[in-house]
Amino acid sequence: MFSRKSMRNLTLASLTCATLFGTALSQADTVEVPVGEQGYAVEANHLRGKKQEKVTEEFGEPMSIQGPVGEPAITRWEYADFFVYFEYDRVLHTVAKHRG
Image 1: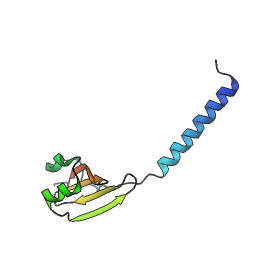
Image 2: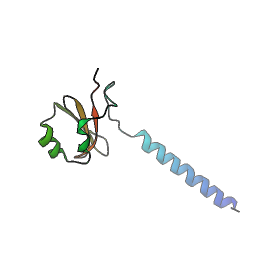
Image 3: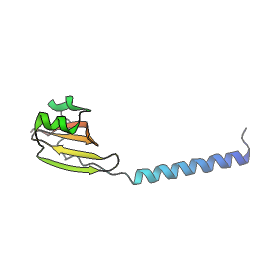
Image 4: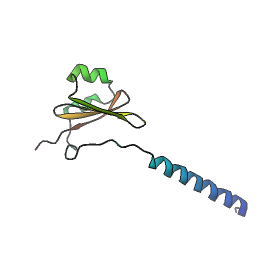
């Protein structure tokens, strides 16, 4: 069995971890996804993992760019029919704009 001292140390370690984890969560940045513009499959889903230069080669310059935000740095490029989300300079995800 555990001694009182080892139980106290274990409890202290657990509280320290919980506090650090809570602090990390409270400092997280958020990336805004426009309301009503999520959930559809995108023709551009083959882009995952590609660099920004490849996206520009295939689709041209984006209509707008937001970010980077947070750590890891997330940037959103807007095209006519979809958004491309980058983590640093690589495609993380594509999201179609709502049609309807």
